[in-house]
Image 1 (cartoon, each protein chain N blue to C red):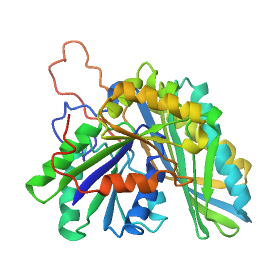
Image 2 (image 1 turned 90 degrees about the vertical axis):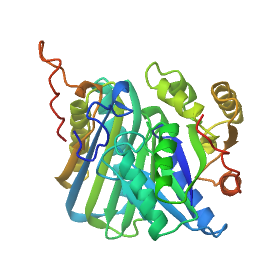
Image 3 (image 1 turned 45 degrees about the vertical axis):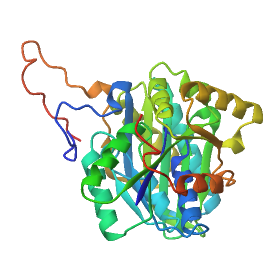
Length: 167
Length: 211
């Protein structure tokens, strides 16, 4: 379990019983030729909607929030969506063409477990970012707890301490 | 130092609202404002976006401040009161946090510093009221958040019709008979000055008690 967690080990997080799962990933993006702001905005919007579609394909019942933050030397870009029918919102301050970027994506959905959220996010990211000519490298990632994380105790071991969740 | 939370479900526009409020409070209203942004994940998105607007923010990640990392939140408030000494702390909890639990966590800081509890402003997304309220599982969180609200801000009003907004107001009123209900748009700035006036006006403790 998270080392920052306070209180007793038996305390559940508020979101655990509701099947909310999440996955966050930070990418280093590089591209041989610089890409302009309009293309980055288009890519980011497409990326949000593609992750959403992939989550739904994998069984997500509810899209909580899919969001991203991109930092380049020329500015930043944020994008997010709360569902395919709502479209994606993209806002950018990037002022010039860029060939390197730091991109964080945070996908929070309900109805599938965190491993599926991770797969959906990574599949969609590869698909969209490669299409726009970026090489991608994962710098950090983090899966969140969900209801599927509640450890199942083998029969006869119900009284024993539960194994701690690792990040 | 008054602690005000800008709560609400996932995707309801909390980050945009907190940026708009902080800029209005520190600019037009000349208040000293500190921001605390909480995300369940430990790779921040919201905090980074807030920083891009030139605002100083304390990012709390790796858990929810209403339960998992409540103590970290309390310690952060104490530290802020001792160092930055803000007039107001705007707190953005996670989209699944329970406002009353965030209030309880904030109140723990009263042992070590002089704080007062401001309003729990809960945002409600005008673009998906049915999805939120009638979701068989998540609807419980949304209703609990609305029930705990001192102020319910119907958000994203730029993307909804007047008929939809009236419907939203009626729906949330059924959940909370006491809260002040208002309409906001962080994109257009609608309702922001009114909301700032409301949350910064002098209060007589315990105006915003935990119900």
